[in-house]
Image 1 (cartoon, one colour):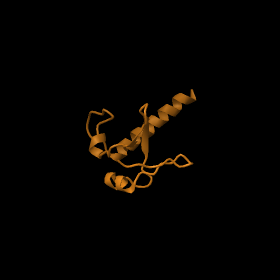
Image 2 (cartoon, one colour; image 1 turned 60 degrees about the horizontal axis):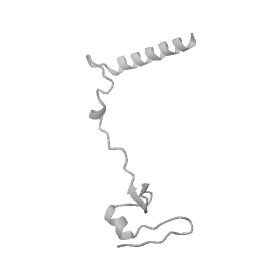
Image 3 (cartoon, rainbow, N blue to C red; image 1 turned 90 degrees about the vertical axis):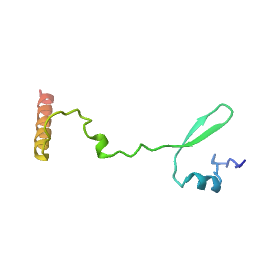
Image 4 (tube, helix red, strand yellow; image 1 turned 90 degrees about the horizontal axis):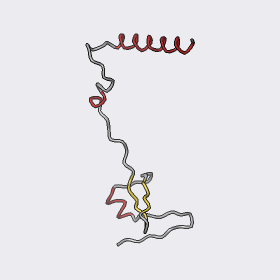
Length: 88
């Protein structure tokens, strides 16, 4: 069992062997859970990597593929409509 000491600033040093075993580097963020009789430190998990394929189709468009020019025209038209509605 490894031990460490709480500093006057409230800091605890995680022993280097443990940091190396878990590949924790400076700047790693942790979630702290109060367990009632102590605390549990867990590394904060970042959002999983997202691939383009995972996001395609999330808007629910069904129909023929649009060119970038057609998309730009559609976006500009939607902006015009929204601003016209807000100006009323």
